[in-house]
Length: 195
Image (cartoon, rainbow, N blue to C red):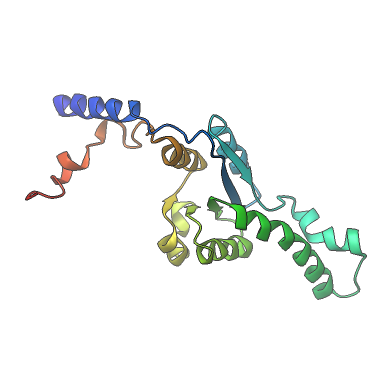
């Protein structure tokens, strides 16, 4: 076990020292969609601050998102009209930024139903955008179809930053499983035993 751990850690160190290098002329637009009740967007932004990444997303202020139409265009007497004018104003931002995104990240929390997040995950998929989904494991079943179209599914915003770092630079973080990590060839055998 000790020798295997040393070999594994040596392999990991060799892997993390490799880098594809960033594409100097390219800035990646990453659209951050989903729950607005935590600081997950700040965590992702801090984790990619060293990369050529611009993070965008919908307006994270629930109150402003609900009332923008009434503030700019005037109050409405009926709730559906109030909601409709605000929704349409918000769509100017979300359609534009989703359309410009290189990668879309959608976070689902476990406290609220996030219809907008599911809608934006669907839009991203329809537009052919690479999708990363973030959510606690307890809601995996409810999101199985969303997870099925995502190119990565993770539980923590730090993992989103690591996925983006690997995507852009080729740099891998330390293994999530720590010293228990084994490269696939050691754990499951070589992929093609008869080349």
